Length: 378
Image 1 (tube, helix red, strand yellow):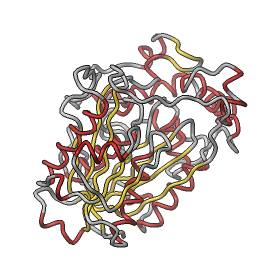
Image 2 (image 1 turned 90 degrees about the vertical axis):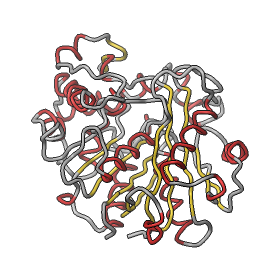
Image 3 (image 1 turned 180 degrees about the vertical axis):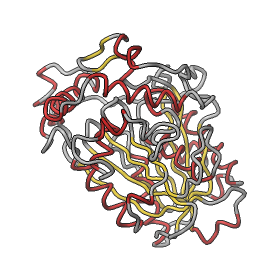
């Protein structure tokens, strides 16, 4: 139990293609929407965290003078780490009300800050010279090893995208809503073997923001609080070629197990699951590394509709990075969906969703953050 709750949550007013807003304006739009959701103004915020933009720039842009700042940037799960750090900061009295923002002009590229791979970096020295062209090619390495070792078929990998499109079909904000079949996925353009187009994340504009404060202040806010029950974080390697085990993420295991122990929950108590899905294999790794499935069994678990609408473990209910949104760092959208599910306001609402676990990845299995949300404090 952390004693901290989410009291404000919102995404940008528009999602998808937003060429009329810069990246900083996307941060601001999401922040203002979250403040409105919580009934607050910038004057009420004394803690700020962000990634993709410098917190210095963001605080100045929004007119916030914080007593606590976090610019941790480890890729798409940065926002999970921000939540974890904010919990500690609030609990220790360093600040009272934290704003965490995300905004990316991933599709339109308006005011987008880049993430160049420096030639002197580890990846710049030992991976880039061998020709990988970003995530679509680098993520092929672990999934091909997984397919070889555990016999996962192309059809089973495709089913991840099929199930998530089923969830997206119920979400009016999803980028793609038309349901698809396994054949549709396998007949879509090959991007980098074994990934077909529909097994790769979207490229969009958008963002989101969260506001956290002490749970005992929850009655002061218009929205029902979403309690943070447990948190975890870890990193493994900036080079996917150097993972301990290409079929498992050490960072997933550490962050997930710590968050669940922190929350004091068992697997049976998780009603809803979000696993970062930049590519179709990530939910499979997440299910196994979190302990919901035994090694090599997650593909069958998804194939048998256990994570689909009506299944025993609803997962990625917004449609995920494959069908909902993916502006580059997807973690904020996963957090937003967990909050909606616990509030009971999600477009594809899971019945009696009292505990939601949200797992994020940064880079190519380089980092991970995990947050457990609950309707009631533990």
